[in-house]
Image 1 (tube, rainbow, N blue to C red):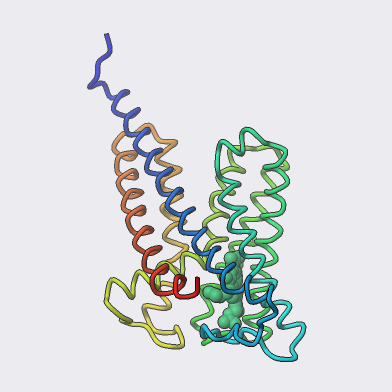
Image 2 (cartoon, rainbow, N blue to C red):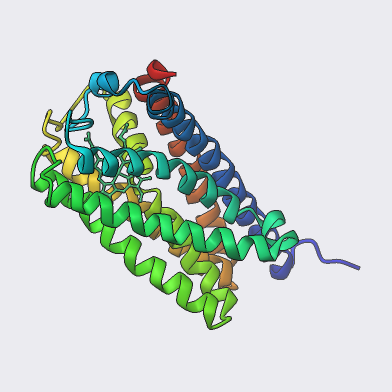
Length: 272
Ligand code: HEM
């Protein structure tokens, strides 16, 4: 006879709840990232395809398209257009049924994802510091540290894949997914912050206010910390740890949904 109140069953239920919370967060995040991609396609994709470069800066960019600057424009447009491929690729890469059914495809799309993440990080870093495309020095530090993490995590993800240490590889791939989507997290956090406070509080137009600086680091460091705790809880035999992290992940689902809704409303949908 099964003892329904046994600690083993309780830990099993906690593990199931933890997994469900993780899957739910991934689904919400995927939906939110695809809305971001739709915005990029509708705004930058459409203008690039029709050659309507003159109006690209209408949405208030830092530098955007500069008449006559061939190299700068090529860098900027390839940055935004490659972002679409990387974001969609990242969500497909972490989808278990696709990974299990098409392992050869997973390997190739994984290589492409890592390559594009590196190109975006290094290209973005170059635009920010070599071309001066930044609102303020201090405001640009968050995304720059994000770029360093992308390079390190991409290296570790690839290293463990080549070494066939698949479990460690999978964990670094998830961490890479978080930091490679740092700019998406920044947007949903900033817009969520504005919506929560009915306007800017601790923010400036140069993005160097205390709230801007905190958000520019916390937007990817907090999800990274939650993911790490989630992975530890999944390994742990403690039911309490698993239940607690399932609760934290469900809060993450709500926060992510709220941030995506705010970014959709204030940042992306006006350009659909
Ligand atoms: C790796 C993931 C990245 C993605 C997916 C990404 C995506 C984007 C997108 C979509 C834009 C257009 C802005 C918008 O319409 O909202 C953009 C612009 C830009 N990004 Fe990135 N980016 C990434 C990494 C970085 C990094 C690491 C840096 C800097 C260290 C950076 C620096 C910039 C700059 C300077 C612009 C131009 C802003 C302007 O002229 O207004 N990006 N990026």
